[in-house]
Length: 189
Image (cartoon, rainbow, N blue to C red; front, side, top):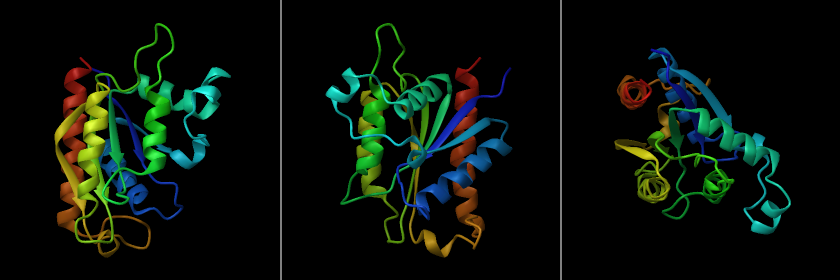
């Protein structure tokens, strides 16, 4: 059996994003669980706002790269910041670009097992936005795990290198990543 291919991404462009640090940790735990993991930073893709007029001129390079990587993956680790109780514009935009399908192509999110994370300095950890992410991804064919994780007061559990220093939080982040790897492995047979 081959190792499942996992894409890890955070719905933030901010250089010191808490959600990027969280997804980096989830990716590390998935790698330790035997998966092949690639972390994608949305800032590196330089995605314009989705517009069918732009798409008619050709899919932007970053959008095509994201689609191709998602299509080749067995699973997705996704951390979503919460903006005003919902998904970030940059994450929604990336999903919109990646969900567009060319003639005869497989939809990028179809049958991809997805684990949802969120974090924030606040007390809810981005929890309210995860339902919106779940609804969007489920609606475009992703198999979103029932378990999800919101990490409140994230700044108190990260060390100076962006690693989770709290053992309870680390165990919870690792547990969800391991669950994703396990399910993706079974579906990858």
